Length: 195
Image (cartoon, rainbow, N blue to C red; front, side, top):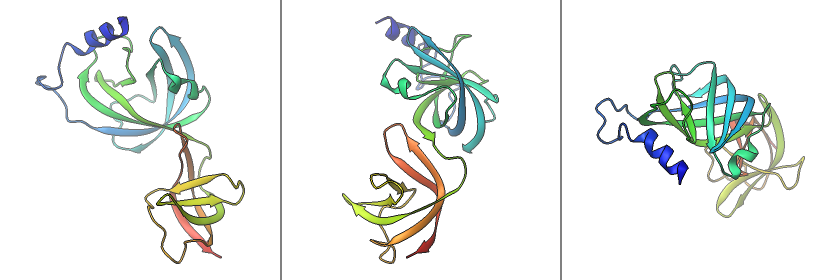
């Protein structure tokens, strides 16, 4: 209940529907490396270095940011020293405190509250080549990596396989990202060989 009251107090100064200086909802995806974490009463506050801007405009953010994850099983998966892809959406609300409020997100240099929409972790840095099979499973295109029989990846943007790849051995070059929800995706990919 205290968490609800604190959250209500943070957002009560300016409702998203009636605030005259409400900004358009923007989004940004950042690659962050977690440098420290601090458990607090409502969850965990993380400090992270912005490694790169993956999508959007991050002009309102410093090279080091803090973000919060309200108490849940989610924060147990975010660990110091690891690198993550975190997507934020501008809530259109302003923070009225000088400290990070109890939010699942961050606050920009302009006191805009940015809420986390997706957290993924980077398992491989840079491009890598994977050899495996192109299959369909439950109506979804999957790439099964030969190195680990049980490891299946989605290729970013592929929902069905072209017949020239389906049920064939292929080599894929790309960046592997594994998301908190267990889904593994190869992004920035290209097929380099068909066997």
